[in-house]
Image (cartoon, rainbow, N blue to C red; front, top):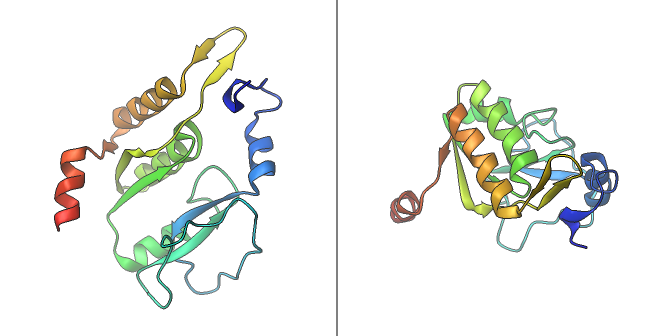
Length: 162
C-alpha cells in the first residue's frame, strides 16, 4: 500500500509532522532566531539553502503547514522589500497551499512551480480517491482561483536567462 493510500488516522497531518520532524521554509533567519536542533529527514540537499553570510538569504524552520506562522518570514520579506514569492514543496494540498494562501492574504504576488511541487494520492471511504497528479492539479487550480500564478515553463526559461 502506498503512503498516500494509508488510512486517514495513519496519514494525518499531525502524524506526518511527527514522522518528518517538521518542515523548513526558505528565507532568512533574521536577527534573534536561534539555531534549531537537527531533524533527520529535514536536511537540505547539497547546494541548496541560504548562502553563508548572505543578508539576502536565510532559512526558517516551520512547525505548522504555513511558512508565515511563527517563523519571522513575513518580517524578513518586508525587510528585504520582497513583493513576490515563489512557493514550491511537497504536499501541494497542505503546506504549499497554506503558505501560498498566507502570502496572498499579505498582499504578495504568489507563483507556484508545479515542476518543483509534489503531492500524494488521497483516498477516503465516502469521497473516493484522487491520484497524486489529480491532487496536485486540484491544489494548483484552487490557488490560481485565489490569485496565485502557475510558474510556466516559458517563464522558467526567461527567469533562468535573467
